Length: 167
Figure 1 (cartoon, rainbow, N blue to C red):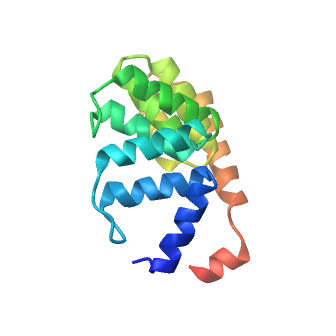
Figure 2: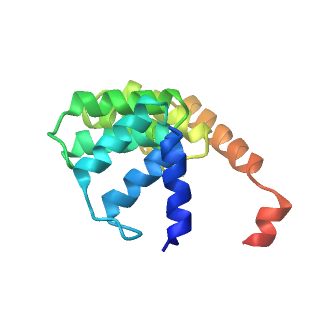
C-alpha cells in the first residue's frame, strides 16, 4: 500500500503529464488499490490519455480492454490498433498478442512474423508458438532456428552477475 505521500508524488507526476504515472494511476483505479475506488471508466480515460502521450503499456492495456470488452464496448479493430501501436514501440506482449490474433484467424505467416519479433526480444511463449507452428507445418525449420537463436541471444544479453546473485 502506498503512503499518502507516495500517492501524492504519483499524482504530481500525473499533473506533469507523465505517461507512466498516468498509466499507473489508471492501474490503481482499475484494481481499486491504494485507497482508490475501482473505477473502470476512469481507468479507460487515464489509459487513453497515457496512450495518446505515447505509453506503450497503456496502449497494450487498452488493446486488451477493447479485444475483451472489458470496460468498453467490444471493438476488436480498435484493440488491434492499440496493440499495433504498442508493438511498434517494442512492447513484447502486444507483439505476441498480434501473433495470437493472426494465428486464430488462420493467418499463420503473419502470426509467425509477429512471434519471430517477440521471440527475438526474449518472449518464451512466442518461441514456443513458433515451435508449435513448425510442428504443424506452418513455419519453416529456418524460421524456428532463427527464432531460437534470437531468443537465446536476447536472454544472454539480460544476464548479469548482479541478477544472478539476486536470484
